[in-house]
Image (cartoon, rainbow, N blue to C red; front, side, top):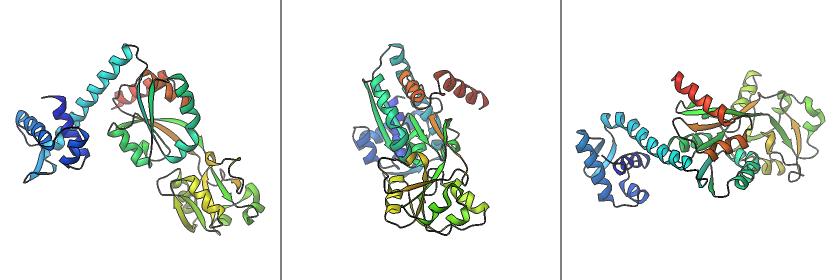
Length: 312
């Protein structure tokens, strides 16, 4: 048994059982991948994959049971390498952060700048995606840290930590009738206009829907997007009233928009940072986390991880 065999199994599952794609990812040949898998199956005495001719079509019941063990063994190997680099006092390496658009565009820029100043030899990679995609990147090991408001807390394989709370704002063009109500605008008044806001599952959208539902109101949502900048663009065109995260407002750039505080209308949102449970964190990873959320010191993070492991 060797790690190349284990990697072949993991990547085969991640690639939807496409051995051509697996061979490309692992920089080997398709027959080489097939041989690695077959040798492992022979050593274990069970078939890991269901076959249709020469094609792999899924996991067998034993394969489904063995996959979490394969994942743990590969994670432990990665942790061993990271731990060795840390104890060797190396300050170079790679850090991958997955975040939603709002976090990447508005919350992370200063964090990234300060981190790069502290660790110039660390290669920093930023991936954007939906909250679900952020979680999946963490689970597959593609990302080391995930930042999002929705979804992360739903995955037991992740350790999630609270970072900061934020509210929504209403954005309208200058002269819009809602501006006459000021900060006293109501859901009933808001529901009279076409609304442009986030896609389902993004940036506190659930709190927006819940608020209208509790008031027995049906908002006229005419356009949704994952990107606050897209929402603001269509509000500027007069297509509707925008509901966005307050952090997505930029006074210098959004000169053609006016803002109304909506914290009295929609529940406060909580942005979370997540890491994959069982992952060894390099020292610079703790530093990035604390730069993003000063309350999340290394001691706090380690304590949260240990508590969750004991509970499990």
